[in-house]
Length: 152
Length: 152
Image (cartoon, rainbow over all chains, first blue to last red):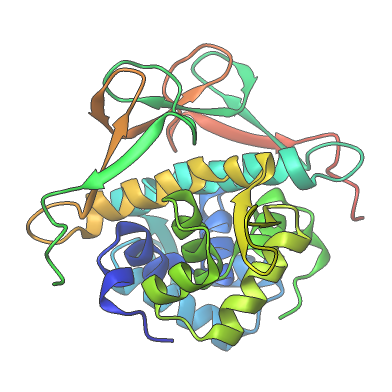
């Protein structure tokens, strides 16, 4: 589906063009939680192998994953997150936090997040890089930035 | 596409079942930035009216948007974010932050975020609800939560 110029000149739209497909984010979830082999990811997700191959290749092409030979076997490969891929961690944590809050099973969240630096269970709090205060839908505002006219 | 049991019992997968479609998140972006009328959203996104109708209805059905009559015109409606919808703000800010960092136009980001409480330009920093330290891909770990067996 084509997006018009206005929609394209938006970093949300750009990001979604790269990762905005459900299987792609679930593949990344697998890699973040330690699954690095095609077979492991395929088994956990139950996704068709051709779809998984396609999504992994896209993620490699975009520089989000690296495909590396496993050292002792030249015919076996694993996928590793690059810095660009690791920087998607906040997106996944926010998706999880929202799902836990609004749509968790009756028993509670399927997974809990531990902050290893303090050793406690945590949920993500989004804060301001300048003052450290919490960012909310009510206290942020968007303005045109330097790239506002880039697609004009 | 069906997701198997393992994948479904995950708050990321659940969230993506609700909002994991590119147009849905772009529709929400429009409402977050002040577009509340069908015609405004349609014009900005250039999305087909049947797709937009479908996505808005899904968002209303899910309790993310409310459809309200504009007070002076019984035949005109607008869409408002509920608390559940407003709580998706962190997801959108993280998608924007990532796109700005890794895939912005050469001139810079199309939009900048102002934190109105401090008046400064900001980017989102994800912090721990317990200790306030920054959460990163390297210092968080997932464990099974109370709902881990809900879909077993």
